[in-house]
Length: 301
Image (cartoon, rainbow, N blue to C red; front, side):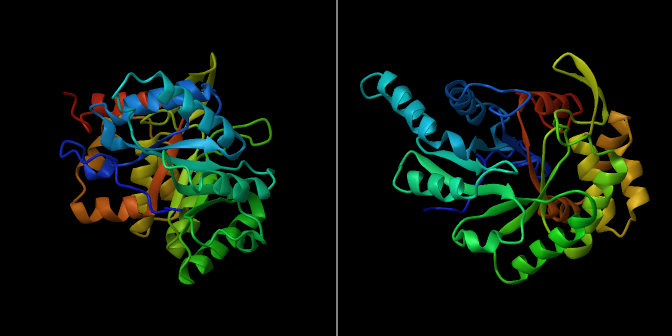
């Protein structure tokens, strides 16, 4: 099964800082889009002026059979000679913490001979036995725990990288019923763990906006981390800034100040930052994209 992700649509107007930054998590909370709508919307995102910012569609491993059904219905509805777009759908299969790991291998097996789908990565919870799951041929994002186990989990990911595995650490930045919102100090500690060990990371949950602030989520105001803050904080951590400095940058609510810091970077800094912070999942991809455009980091047509 192909496992190397394809690059986002080539577009010289999309700055390297933003290429493939936002993975499409439309079916996950709080978006909760039906899978058929998510697939259709994803095709629209990949054809839009901001396509270069958008990565693959995130699909729960429990929805693999439904995904195939959705594609069957989509293709049956296409007119004679009409080609559905994209012809091949890049997806990341996601197993939430607590899910049976066997679902991952079952999902991969189900899609192995599906020509309309390319599984570019798998996300699952870190646990000590993850190497025994037989996932050597696919890119992995391992969601690490919080608290005392986190440093050991990140170190384990580092050991796997050293051994040639294609793996990144993953951390949840938004709240769930079982996962209180991690503040800037906790997120800074995760970033510090990763950058000190040279472990690339991705984030998930709660990064719906460009800059840190208090925003309504489902009609309820909540603190949200900002994706630009994370980029700037990652740069500071890579340059040797400690957790306090990183946390301070994560807490900045001045959008123009944060944007000015990012736009001043030379190409080498951009490459280092995106090599460290690889992408994040967002259920409303147009929200951060629009805000990044408003801040002149992304040119509108």
